Image (cartoon, rainbow, N blue to C red):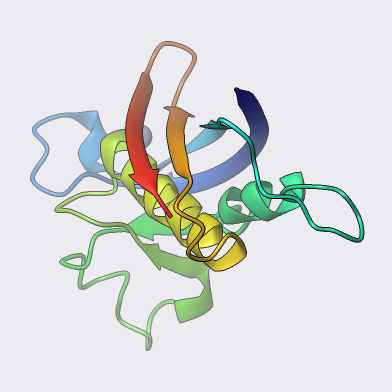
Length: 146
Ligand SMILES: [Zn+2]
């Protein structure tokens, strides 16, 4: 079994629509994303003899750095007359919660693997761990075959 681990730190703002508490107001976090991908044997580039550039996974989260995370129902931040669209990233689901930031990360990791390792029928176990604060961590796991 081979294991690939990548870690990225990024700063964002978000708010939780309809939330009855302080998280309804725009606030920021320094997030930590830990991605773990396991396979019996990763395919390797024949020239370089490497599997996947760690930077490719880190870039998923670096893309979010210094941006506003929103859901698609947050009409205020999606108004391009008020906010620059390149500074706003839409998360899946009804709010840009830690659960949905992890889901966004998982979907992106799957896209990277599918693009990089096409149709080889290899099973990958993916774990995306998102730390919103020192005490708030959400982990999402998925096994897929690509
Ligand atoms: Zn928050």
